[in-house]
Amino acid sequence: MRRQPLLLAALVVLPSVGFQSLPVGAQPAPAPAIQTLPAPQPLPLAPEVKGSRPKSNPSVLAPAAKELPPALQDLRAPNPLALPIKPSQVRIRELRPLALADVETLVEVNNPELKAIASQVEQAQSALRAQIALWYPTIQLNANSLPTYTGGQQFSSAFTGTGQQPGNTITSIWRMTAVLQASWGLINPTRTPQIAAARDRFEQAKNQYLIGLRARRLEAAEAFFNLQVSDETVRIGQESVRSSLVSLRDAKARFQAGVATKLEVLEAETQLARDQQVLTQGLSDQAIARRALAALLDLPQDVTPTSKEPSRVVGSWLPSLQESIVAAYAFREELDNVLLNISIANSEANTALGRVQPFLNIAYGLTGGRTRGVQFANRSTPGVNFGNEGWSVENTVGLNLNWTLFDGGAARANYRRQKQVAEQNTYQFAQQRDAIRQQVETNFYELEKNNRNITTTSREVISTRESLRLARLRFQAGVTTQREVVDTQRDLTQAEVRWSTAISDYNKALARLRRFTGLDQVGLCQRQSLPATSPRPAGSTLIPVEPQPLIPACRAGSPIGPEAMPPGS
Image 1 (tube, helix red, strand yellow):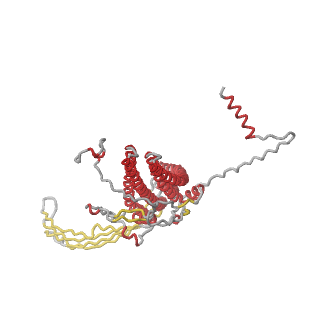
Image 2 (image 1 turned 90 degrees about the vertical axis):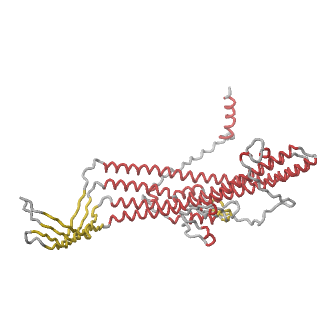
């Protein structure tokens, strides 16, 4: 029963959508030719584009700063092993305003994690140099007697049947012996793949440094934007508390005049408490954001950074989504590292197979020694007193062959295992490729969303400010209640918080796109000429925001209120 109306509606709609009525006798127009899309071309393989063993390319990224400018010299990182032991050594003595460019410079010079990654690059280079040494001969000097002295006395007596002559033997002899050995591998099947694997690990370490440099720059930018949004939250909280104080003053004045009720005063006090919570949260977030940035920049223990610049939109992203994705594939070192992992696994497979192949070395040895001393025998038989002196030199040259004829199949099994590791890395390449595209697309769409949010929240802030002004005028004229003023003021606070959050999220998404694509095509926004002091409407009264005392949690958490509890509670 229910399908018939739907079917009739479909029949009524179809002629108007898919067909056109023709006059009587008219010939229908020929159907347009169906356009066929060209068949998609097969995608090139990564080893064909980047090479099977891609090299690190530091030119795709601006080099890291090595020295601080003169204005930031006093913010140099302390000794890595420095440890404060007194409260005065960690007491904050300076609040240093920093710009985004200063933060990026400081993180490149001071960040300890980036320094550790740079040390790993040097370690990989040293490991490569150690493997290259396999091409050179080895020379060893062994001197077990350099020199040795033998001295002592021996007494013997005559025994029947032994033929031994009685008497004393005194020995005092110096001996010196040294052996010089040289060996050079003529045939070493594991030498070339081992050097190739070490070279690939060195390239990986250099790529990892570029990855770490981009990551530290992104972390510094995000920490700076978090600090900016916390500063905005503090400003919004202060303005909200100041506005709530005005509303509370007006409500109390009207209540004393007898034209308002106690309920309106309580509503104003409730809104003041809410705004004080916003200010408290903002102050806490501001302190945490400042110290988080200080830890990232490894600043001196008595310095806390602050934001020199107000929260504003940095710029606009110029490349399209497709250009951003292709640029990310070309510049991301993570893909190069996966290809190097494949090359390393293949080199390890060749190394495992080369261990059962013949090794041929040429060896040379030179042995020399000298003996000098006296051995005196006091015996009845004449001719046993003599001196001991002599020397000897011996040269040895030969070839050494080492060939493992059977190892139970261990070498072949290790070879297959490394080949399987290389195959596993090919799937990891696909996984990394898809993850890179997802990162770019996610932040590109986040950038567009936050761009729209900036527009909508800015309109919301403007309209809500006007609504609050009109609500106060209506309240002062007695045509509305305090509830309307309180609700509008709460809406204004929330709108300003959303507006500042949208700007911060937009800047973070922009920084991530620069990190994930390697592009720096950002249209910077024109700086606004802001006055030195905050503009205020004419006739407005400046009401200071007094600091609230910190009440112990046991008292503040009481359901009857902190004022009703005894001070010692």
